[in-house]
Amino acid sequence: MCSHETVTERFADRLALELLVQTFPPQMVDAAVAASGRSEQRVRLLPARTVVYFMLAMGLFPDLGYAEIARRVGEVLVRWDISPARQVPTTAAISRARARLGAEPLRRLFTALTTQIAATADGDSVLGLRVRGLMSVDFTVLDPRKARYRLMVLAETGDRGPLHAKLACAGDPGRCARDLFSQVGPGDLLVLHHDIVDSEVIRAASASDAWLLYGVRDSSPPGVTAPEASGTVTPGTASGEDVQLRTTLPSASPAASVDLTQLYDRYVQFKHLFQERHNGPNGVPPVIRSRSPEAEEQEIWARLLVHCATYYRRERHVGPPSRTRHVPTQRDVPDRALAFVRPPRRDAPGVLGTAHERAVGRVGPAGGGGDPSS
Image: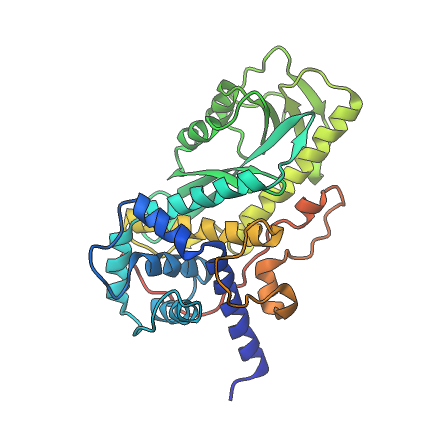
């Protein structure tokens, strides 16, 4: 007989999967698959739509084996009348289905979601400028001979969260940064953390039309030639870090400097929570289970989508799917599932606005062994 804890955990895990289905309804998934040219020409045991949901579940439960993930996904899809009941596919069948799908549908799914959010959510602003923050997380692969991946995300650190993302080799951050900075302009304030500010990134940022606010550990950041209007905001300890804040904004009043310092505090905490969601204990970069380059990228995009679902579901910016089936609310959710829809308790100073204080939570891993993928 199952213990109460086991029943509670199972309900929480199912709820988390149902929230993913609600965030990414079948119509959105099918559109991303079709736009990628990956729609099926014949009926399969694992259609592309099901494989997308499998990948999302893999991002949610990175420690579970293929068979258990497939079983859980199958149960939820049947419950939501998205797919008929099917036998649990083999690991080999799942690997082949992943290879057919590729990474592009998941990248397009991210674009579709962030476009929807950007059109409906209120953005963060300071001094009349939209605020954009750069964040990054590295992923380790199973083959020690291969370089890490770096996922760089341009985010609005208020209600909108991640807006744009690029994935590249961890040894080439400049290319990612240049691509992302093409999305900002003269109406934006781009915030950069001191551990991201290197010669490549700051050069790409300086070449954009955006205003900059960045932290450095000394007065001469590497590779930076500050514009004439640049100035130091504060030599203090923003967000508890011994950094100096610099900006390309014209010299501001003391009140504006306080606003910029608090803005940097919000950005740093948002960035730390973003990295916590992806990194393992003690900040260890997560290990990607997949083995081929295409499958590795596919898995990373799936993890980012789970992060977005966590953030956006909590902010209540994703509308309900076109279904009449009841979706449990937070009042129905046991403690284990609250990690998916609520943030961890933090003792940070109260400098954050309400949107920032509700920054992204962590999904607790559910134990089990993983299967190698394609």
